[in-house]
Image 1 (tube, rainbow, N blue to C red):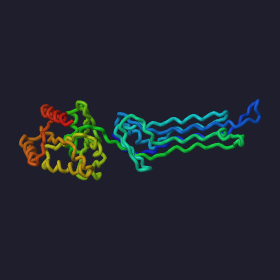
Image 2: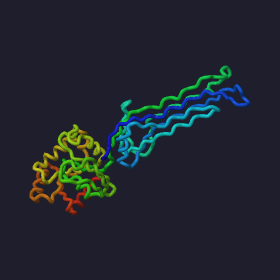
Image 3: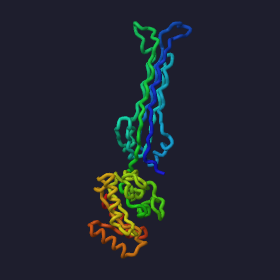
Image 4: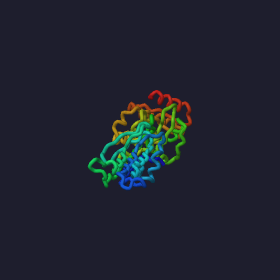
Length: 318
């Protein structure tokens, strides 16, 4: 199952405490201060990886901590710096900092600092002076930053396949690409986006939309965000539908309610599963859409010529 939204608590490491110590050995009975400084706490970074399942691990791990700095020690020994923590997320993940209502997107493998480690405290050796030769105090290490982050993946796909449940989207994806999605003759077979590649173009098959999807009905609006980045939408209309134009309008309305800019994307409308219907019914569907000045192309996964034509249209719209 694709995990595309999680909320986690990240905590940078605390700084190590400074030490209180005085030089003592056989040669020196009452030496000066030699307490070392504490080490800095580890920072927390986020970076992108080319793995859409990278958020899966956060289904069970909700709190992540960087290493704290080591305390200072006698003989002016400085504590070791805490190890930084690097969080890997999929390319296209939005990071929402819930503590200050800011957000940013992860689009490359650069490391982005999200929580700073605490500064190490100074040992008593740092406080000696001409008038204060034996200070008996030190600094404690600072606390590391703590952030509550919401991670939300938006797939970086070039083409999105949309439509009502059981409109033939997964079968079409499998025929166009090397993907192997689960396919069945019942609604909501697809419970998560599937990805395939066609001549360098990433194509995403989005789980079926129903009336009210933009408000969370059915499988909800969680998948609509995965088509916000696409350049082209392939809108599948089931050839068995009794009201194909209404099916088309339902999906378009959900796109509008979620993000009106989705309506401005380039769109290829296809009538699918033509092998199950009489040619007259297919022709009637095409005529209905044509009367509304909407171009619709009959496509069958068993008709190589129709698939080749669709591939050319996708390539043309790149």
